Image (cartoon, rainbow, N blue to C red; front, side):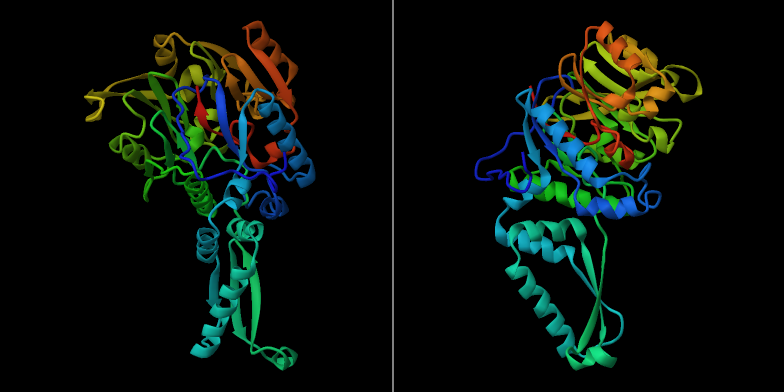
Amino acid sequence: MDPETEVTPSSAPFVVQQAAEWLPARVVLVCEPRQETLFAILHAEAASFLYPFALHQGREEHRAFRQCLASFGVRVLDLRAVLCAADANALRAWARAAVRIHYDEPLPEPLRAETERQLDAALAHLDTASLVDVLFLRPTLHVTRADGDAARWSRVQVRFDVQPAHSAYYTRDPLITTARGCVITRLDQDDRLAENDLAEYALRTLGVTPIYRVQSPGTLEGGDFIPCGDFVLQGQGLFTNADGVRQCLEARVYGYVEVAVVEDPRGSLDEMHLDTYFAMLDRDLALCLETRMHGADEPAVHVYQPEGTRDQFRYVLTRSVLFSRYLEEKGIRVIPVSKEEQLRFGINGFTVAPRQWIGVRHAGADLHARLRAAGVTVHEVDYEALAGGYGGLHCSTQALLRG
């Protein structure tokens, strides 16, 4: 499965919906890391990566994971391949919007116009794969008047820099897929905002119109959303703020279901999203970091009920309760996970079907033994390199269709 050659038709409407995280996955969006991720590896801390890793190893891990998904009959779409199937004119327009020209000194209008002309000419000649590279790398051309030897062959000098979408292989965060459709989120970190655009371009290429896009000052990230049938868990914490949640409630993006806003009291990078400390395995079974079930780290859950008809309703706050109590009310049995296992991304796996769990091998044999004892079939994949981007398998997937 090569994302450079896989072509996704965009002619027919593409159905997207996800009512519950444990339903069989039918279509999953991923993104193999390429040169954009290399820039983050060169300075992991600045990119909010956990540690540097070998990009080639990471790509091999990603391909093996995709093969594992495909073995369950999942249609796996690579974000790059989807974009390569976009209308050429649309793709050039998106690429042009991704390129910035900065004149580092005042230049006469004819020189500025010539710079613009040459850029437009270049984009007109690029193939689709190269145009997609432009979208991922977001180059800036710093233009000055040529001097010295350079003035013998050019009137200007250009220095290039890029603002790469280095975390694009984490397709979870720029979208949420609800029972109603797809929402374009708004990532908290400025250097990740381009991922929201890439996600929207991909959806439109697939013939999907997003039902909403979160606006500033709201932030909302996909790792904080877990659909659970007749209710959803919507995290609010380090990277998802109250305004982002408010917008989604007012836009009724979750559908006619109960919305449980899980308010994280901790707000730390090692547990940055709800999916870093909680995962659904089936309608009545979940994984949870043990410290999140009691004490100071236990979240409060603010419960919103839909009021009105299915066509005309609003969400109304009805009560607040602690996380453990809410899960108990829903009849969900929790398999506790240690902090050490959580740090190895043991919770951040992918439920491909009820009690069918794809987990990272380096999470540890003890955790997977407890899962198997609870009736869960565990499929292990290697992901130790790619976890260096500060995420696991759940972070690396966006289920567009389940059921």
